[in-house]
Length: 435
Ligand code: SPV
Ligand code: MG
Picture 1: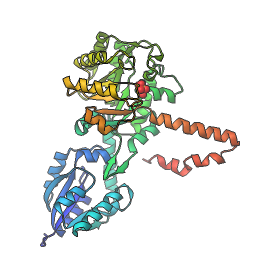
Picture 2: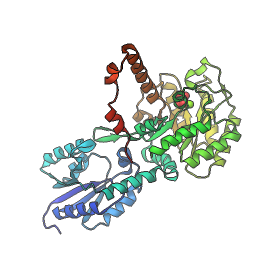
Picture 3: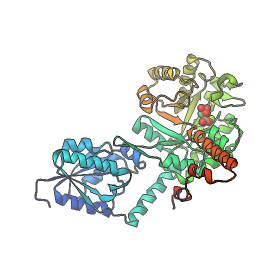
Picture 4: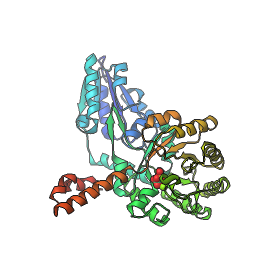
């Protein structure tokens, strides 16, 4: 029991409370009246992984731990706002944040505490292997089909707008899974992965014309799923014949994919970024609605999403056609609408979103800003977009680097000159986490 007037603040992001946490809480409560900040679902999802238990559950658990006086929500990784409001005498944390990506958070805590004369107490971090095992197990759980599938919908509800990065192999999946940036007291990660037909085909040296068959595309999904936990959005091209699409839906759903996007084209599909330079045929509204209905009827869970992609702007059929299709497709049961454009100027995308949102406030809108790439996620969100897909940037950046190295070796008749362009062998070995 504490006998002084000190107040103590700690923040937790964990959803698996173990004896190491209880020990640190016990020690912290001896220093003064203890307030626990429970990190919001959104803040956890953005820096670590999707929480297994929602904020409401985690709050109740902390409220019932001996020594805890108050429990509040901490909405960002940064402690600054909460510390300036509560002005606790002491902040308690494990000493593991002295290095690594949490260091800037710690530095900020130290400087805010200095503003009013508070102090930081750090306890040695218990990196007990049994606790690490718990974290490993929760990651495995998050990667299982049933846990993974529904998470895209949850993230859209939680964040309003989510981002997805293209992945076409295990290693690009790991980049989408693990890349983290800390900026202004917030961490940023991609929320999901996009398995692009363009990049999946390109990686196999094939054109993007629905030539790579579904079995092979499923193999790519499986490679990525094996090493990641984030939700997957699958580029289903046209969806093929309706009679085939129903099987694709069942397979994707069973694998744990969260969303398939199918485009309203028929016949020999070519990549949308060709626009009207090549012959492309848009499907009729009736046929495409039938495909959506059949797909929705085929799925077994509520989680799986079918997104209808509208090609009217790509094929220069006009805004009215795009909107008519969007309302018809959402009416037929599409869980989301993707609107595509190959213009640099985002005006037609913005106009579509504004007009669609006037009549439909709920159906998520998906965009792929390859051409209109000046718009930030924040602006898309403000305008009513819910999913932003970076559809091909890893492919477009990776291959030029490889071509350069190949040319450098050929030019010099040896690899020495190319060495600085390459990761060290040590780095490449460490890139893949050991099980
Ligand atoms: C893909 O990434 O394969 C897409 C998006 O379908 S786009 O290339 O812009 O058509
Ligand atoms: Mg595609």
